[in-house]
Image 1 (cartoon, rainbow, N blue to C red):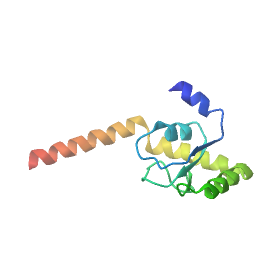
Image 2 (cartoon, helix red, strand yellow; image 1 turned 60 degrees about the horizontal axis):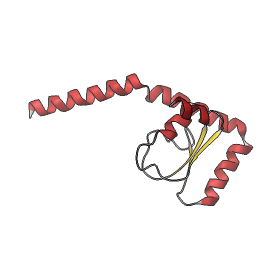
Image 3 (cartoon, helix red, strand yellow; image 1 turned 180 degrees about the horizontal axis):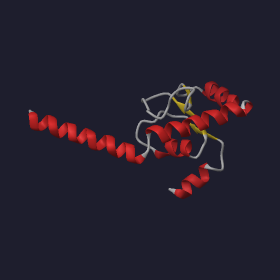
Image 4 (tube, rainbow, N blue to C red; image 1 turned 180 degrees about the vertical axis):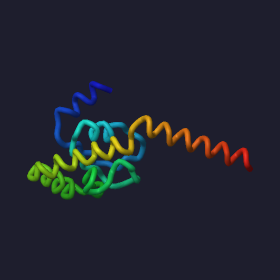
Length: 117
């Protein structure tokens, strides 16, 4: 939602200290508005490429979380580049039109496989 994006635009760093088990839009939204991101390791997430689109930490490791946030606060240029790379990655791989095209292709292939079985 626009209200949620407006809140995210007021911060520089988004922290998700737990593994992303179910789809939650917060991570995608925070990347889209240009936040540097720190997330807990866990379930594979196509948005998270360690050191390229986000920094990762072990779940329940407070020291690792502290270290990553401190790194982003001390090296503002790196934080800016991390946020910029995540935005570029989203634009390239997560455009709605591209996702719809891939979904339609998957359905066509599934239907073709079922018809040919």
